[in-house]
Length: 86
Image 1: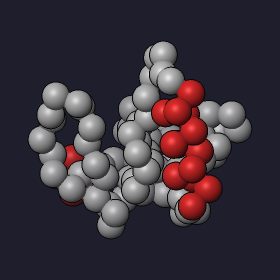
Image 2: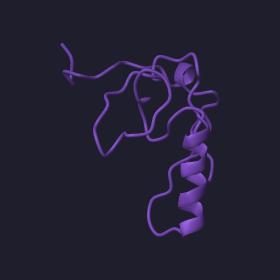
Image 3: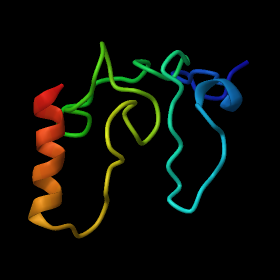
């Protein structure tokens, strides 16, 4: 029996490079973990990803963390430059 029909079981010690919750709450995915490229492309929500599909979780592996809320135009430009290089 499963709880989520489309869920993927992961082990937190295997999917994260270092499972330590810090003050910035950024957990970096292990590039060889099963959460990388395991997501589903959702137009206008997961438009920028590396690999064959978006990663599971809030942050794409190898990309700068997302910023939610107000931000400067410069911050947005830096993120666009990151994706243009990859």
